[in-house]
Image (cartoon, rainbow, N blue to C red; front, side, top):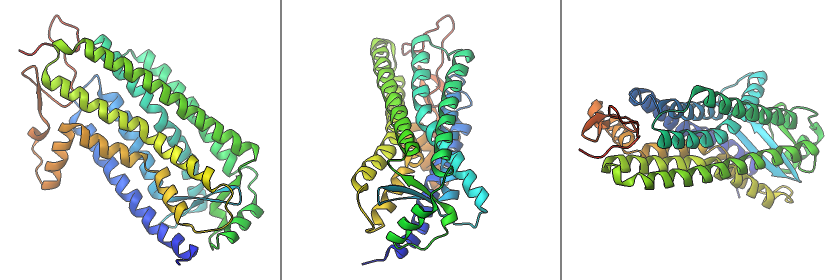
Length: 340
């Protein structure tokens, strides 16, 4: 049977490779949004926000190569970068990464509400409304960052870290290992806050998604086939983006609950759980490029070496537009127009 030290060494390369793929797909999605959404003034800001957040989060994961270890009723977080970063850089990546974890969860409800407003009113929401939502998201993400800092840095239990590392039979720089007992108050607050935040975000998404479907159904008779198709594609992409952070976080919670009482054992389940915990950017980028057909066509042509802009052109109401463009005819403010 493979030793834990060997598994830990393999995680350095497996985790790095996984995060490389995630960063590459997130970079491609960011490129597509930047390059192909210039003529989408209504929807461009929220698409760009999601792409930038996933890109940054995947970059931080690539630099840090985090790994979670559950043993002896404790949770340890290891920073195992491929490059020899100074410890202060590793610590900063951990704290900033926590901010983007929360931000990635909270951005999707904003995207849903943004899209709902456009469908109902035929125009982008006012900047004052966006500013209020952005402020709330940033405050909640900052609270999450503080909790992560408090859990992993304040009052670090060096004896606990040494004991768990010894039980798991791993030799590693303990300056890059952080953790606490599950029953400790900081850890309990940490889990309660992130569980509550993800649950409220999911409820908001479900409500907004239902309203979006109702509005689309009400306007179905005046929607063109391509308009319907584009909205169906966007709905699928946003749905997967909504559940991807929930999937990654709940998979971690389930694993922790199962492994809570173990002492020692194989490190392999921790490796798998650690990769699932950072899988949201990869899931978001791949599914968005797959479900949104214009992006998928452009990506395929890009892989094949074709860079013609016509690969992402779509036609709505016999008018030349770009993917997911929301346009209005003169003297008509509705989002949807009858086909010519």
